[in-house]
Length: 264
Image 1 (cartoon, one colour):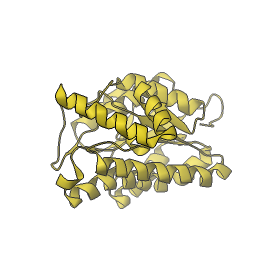
Image 2 (cartoon, helix red, strand yellow):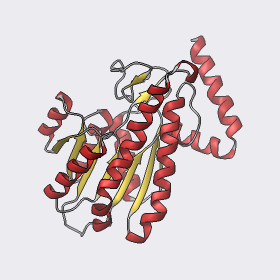
Image 3 (tube, helix red, strand yellow):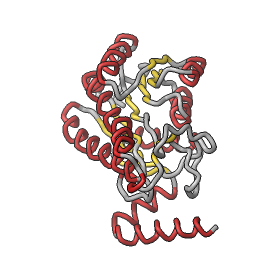
Image 4 (cartoon, one colour):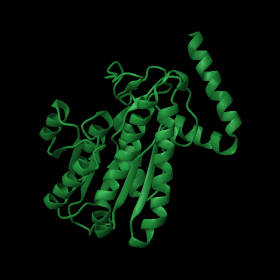
């Protein structure tokens, strides 16, 4: 985030009308940023307009729509200093019981949605020598039971942004990847589209839930410190350390936790 000192910085947030998106918006506004929110048209996006942000209805799975909306965002703001790739869905269910169409849909939203926006705003972020912040998950670096499609989408997202970091460094651009564990954003509001596809943060089988406001603070502090990887929360930090040094131990602990919750 290399805007000139004293200049007003602009952040673009995909999925900015949802729970974590709203928390990120509030945190950025408190830090003096301008915020442009991209999300699906609807009441939640209209509500975001009351929070001193610019709103842009957009389906991130449509590359033509993304290109048009991002051009509008660039025209409305002199500098794009931070892009937060937060749009996404969850998916809960065994792979054996999940349709291939649902698997593809999750990857279209979580991975290709981010790719479309990154492609459209690549030049703007280079111009500002700004930052890309990808909101991944513990499932982006480790297995997560009953989340095969979700984990695949987040693994793809991490591979993409880690590589983008190496390519954009020569342009003065920084890339951060944030990995939250379980966030309490949509408990009781799954909004499912079928085949286990649901709102992020709606899972009821998680542990040690983190509030979105605290998660937003951790993410933005990590970006300010130009950290390449930002584990968000105690579970995320422990998961990253255990999986790094012993993937087999991580898998055993994960399954033990699942069995204990099943017995509760």
